[in-house]
Image (cartoon, rainbow, N blue to C red; front, side, top):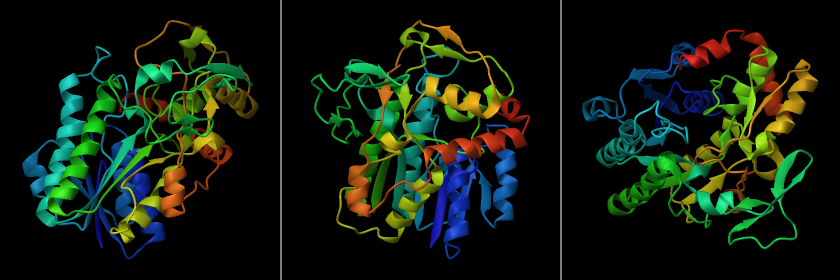
Length: 356
């Protein structure tokens, strides 16, 4: 079977390709990247050493996609994954739509042409911001947690958000492009009899991720702490109590392989895929872990709120567990230690990330 991965030389794409080559050598893995990020060249060399074919192509260009070899399955791992993209005054709103939505259309047309299966890596940011921002919270162990004495909106519990939680606007331009891509993928699958799987991922984290405050927050925080770079808690009173869960891409890869090898399984095509409550951590707790690992470092407070900020995001992946027998295997401490070891081994990582 031939697998095509978009965004091949990004953190997620390269991690998936590496896992596939190491755990299912019968797969022929290839993909493409536009190499906008400076560190992508490092991943190109590592992938080529594993026998992964790397093509230069722009997801937005029909002629570039048409020129790619035929594949049996496509994994859409290319995206501008910042919730601030297009609204921060630094990036283009048109470009995020071109990359994240129109690029998916080009891949779906490719799948139609070659009758290939399609996997969309979607995001937790498709869920509606107002009900998330107003969830009843208390602080426990330096982290926001759901108030056990308050009434909760539908489809949320201490286990996290289910797939039926509201996706009503606003969800950010980023979230909207992914939500629209989900619907288009399902429509293409129905219209052209293509197997389609949609995985709404929590924060993906691990060694080799570019460290930026808007993308790759775990890598950014640990690399910055190690090198005593400025850090600050933004919003929510400047306390760092906001919480996210995280997932290692190799755990995601295990689920993708199951979906690729069982394309006709009679289950719902859309599921949350995340580390859940076991991997949930606040920035303040991440600072405590970093202090134990690297020594003391001060963090500034910036209490002002930002658009699209939410206090708590944890996904309930029970559906993926029920449908596929899937559970994360790589624990939060293991993920953090892998990132820390990578940070110690790559003293220029933040400079590479800044140019990404």
